[in-house]
Length: 358
Image 1 (cartoon, rainbow, N blue to C red):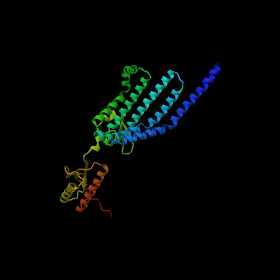
Image 2 (cartoon, helix red, strand yellow; image 1 turned 180 degrees about the vertical axis):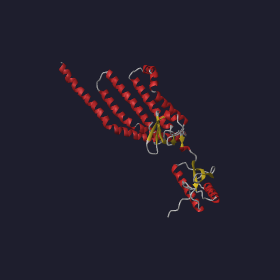
Image 3 (tube, helix red, strand yellow; image 1 turned 135 degrees about the horizontal axis):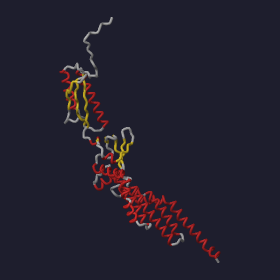
Image 4 (spheres, rainbow, N blue to C red; image 1 turned 90 degrees about the horizontal axis):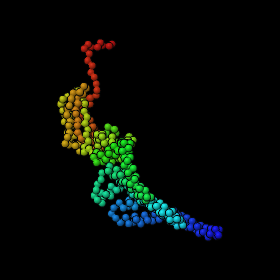
């Protein structure tokens, strides 16, 4: 009798297994094709709008959509098998948990395109968000997305999230003491974000480092030095240091002392000072509101002309170009007047003349 039952049930079970395997293989083989087909449809719909924000959303869900078809194939394959209601319930929970993770992954990918998101927000809402705020908010959203996904998945499996939160409250003090430095860096990052002493791409100088700001996260700020080394500074350190933001200069200073020889006649020195001042006042790249060119002091081996003025440009390469042009024009003035630049020298006088050598 048992053998007859087995002979009846076994072929049916084999057919169910083969059918489930066929369903699984079908979805695994066609998951990319199905996902690409849906992506093309969504992109056609999003292409009708004036903004590319929806395009970014669609592309963010491209890979999760592929895995969605694979997940659906696994779910349908198991669901087709003649399993008990308890197993079907577990399979349903796995499917819903995977669905939540895929949705969270799509939104997580969307936060990566914060550079494009900044342009879209400006076009749609007229909001111009500081460059340094966008990546920081992106990291905040990532943490929120992960936390929400974990919470929903945990609740899906009937875990009491309230007891978990209560456990965090009991261990909060120990956690705060252990993460004191991390918390201070987080608050330091918040201070930098709110105070805005610099932005992404700015050239800054601190007692610790000088370079271009590349990124800011919860713990630290990354700065690329002019030697192309990347320096990572804790936010707590950076928030407590004086920061000079050279990128926010309106004008850029040039100052130095020009020493001419002591043999220069007073009249020629006056002419040189006047010509240098006039040249600076007429130069198109020099800031006109504050120019100093004065005979300043009697140095040990030179008569010093003090020069203090500003360039209109703050770009370093353009600044050096203007500075070079000014130096050449000063040399031309000195050559025209027959005045030589002094160099460090010492004159020695002997009270008793030296004997003549034969």
